[in-house]
Image (tube, rainbow, N blue to C red; front, side, top):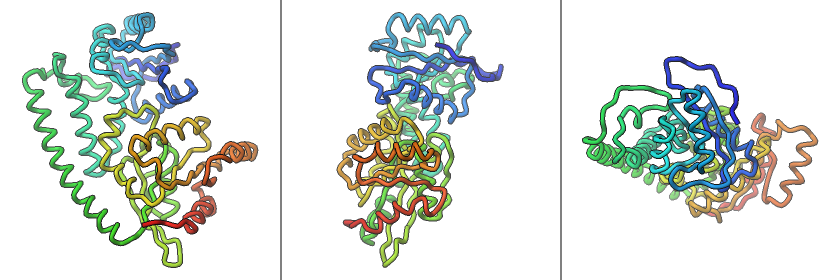
Length: 372
């Protein structure tokens, strides 16, 4: 199914975005998954010319698409003179190469899309280095033996450029860049370890805010600690971990830390890239899972976050569920939410518009028995 195109710029390549709902998808609603894919495109600020949304019963290990769907997309590309195709799913290097040959287009997958969003959102030296290393590892698997141009693979989505062949320099360049990046990361990691050691010695409990991207974690840390962390209504507005002190009264202080948001089908390479940052969760005395209660897909988001926490080995940490943005719900919707979350404990309903909106969460943390 094709949708109307957005306004275009004739100086850039013609772009087709392809949203795919595959059997392995963790979100129950195809519509919600498609909307999330469009939000990723919007977050990147990418203009596209055409869009297709497909449901797949099966995938092919060589081309991802089965024969009929493969031909359907190829015909669409040919008819609309498409030059770049952005696919909502993670592709193997083999699948990407075969699709480029079949479509006669440059193909980008979910990993490349989220990598660019991460690169734009990274502010701290650590997050920039982590993204740089993830990009290098990603490009390594795409370039070798492909005979493509540097501008095609190492450039930005939607950008044209000159072609410098990678064949002769790729191994040396990638190897050297990885060594340099790892050296920087090791230095930054030592500084993080020193800070962590000092914090542990201080016996001040650490509370980590976790959750799906755009659930409102940055807005919550701002409200709790009167901070000014960037909080925008878009996916992955912040990547950098922010830690602030919160005074709970009676000599009870805690540290509150905001972490990178999660998303359905988050490429494993990106989880690996942020392992050192997410490692902070292992030292948390309490996890606050922030859930956007105004998003109809919140039950699916909950499952995605739980799976990632299991992958990180922190699923057994003490946790409270903070159902956020209840101010966006009608009275009837709030009552339904209360019924739906009865079995999810402990939980609180919050909004970050006012101090009163987070009072129940603060009360929980005051009463909580933090174990250092």
